[in-house]
Image 1 (cartoon, rainbow, N blue to C red):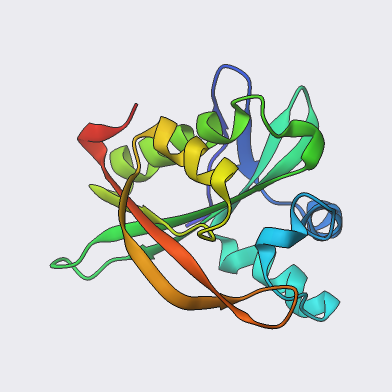
Image 2 (image 1 turned 60 degrees about the vertical axis):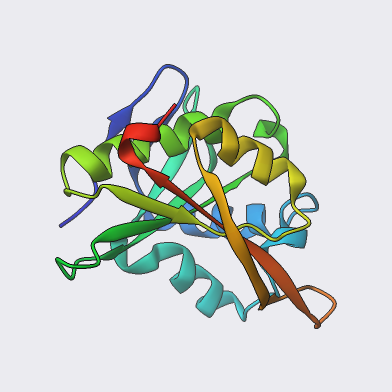
Length: 169
């Protein structure tokens, strides 16, 4: 099922186009983003990851590609939830656009896809992201030790955060 176009106050979430994928690969390779994205993949693998089998939105602000929101759904009825990820170009950070994009995606995932619980797992050192996710209503659940490889090649901890739909702010 393709993702729809979703409008919020300042952001629009829309299906990715092939033209977006190359620009998004450049965004995740930019300083201010790449530190949190993990080790670089070969270009085609990076683009495939951004496509996320269609479970991703392009984030637009004033008609300009600002970033990406991806999601993965657990559809087993007894464990149903959605995991989210987001990346914004440095020029769009620190303006409240990430939380707005996440709220928009969460509302759609709850209302149209039936999810009641959401997770996100930023790097433990990524304090900016953790503050942004807390503004949406995400709460700290625990530390996932050595959960992802960093740019330096070593394993780093991630913070597991979750949100119940009624906690959405």
